[in-house]
Image (cartoon, rainbow, N blue to C red):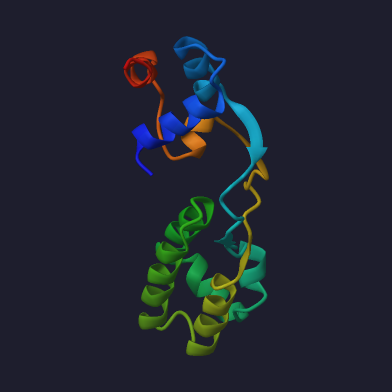
Length: 145
């Protein structure tokens, strides 16, 4: 449905409203159920979780490596892709075994429901229909014969 067709349907639904009143209604935010379903997000493992997987000698080798700070930064920034890249560097450098690498990768593949998801959102009827702000002139031009 085009924006013009949608506006015509709104004019028909609210014939008692003037162009200004209808425009105001279509641009006023209302609380509605979020039309976007909740999604999954990555769960970045904590340093403590990783330290239970790696051996003591790996922990020591990693802690002494400059890659360690990059991994901490990647955890802080919630960047699993950076973590994998740095773990690959550690594995290639012999500081991390394949088994530890695989176990950490398995941790990185965990997901959870998005904790920042909002079940209800403030949105205008126009935005909900997929259109931006409606101008009074948009409605007026459809009202004039």
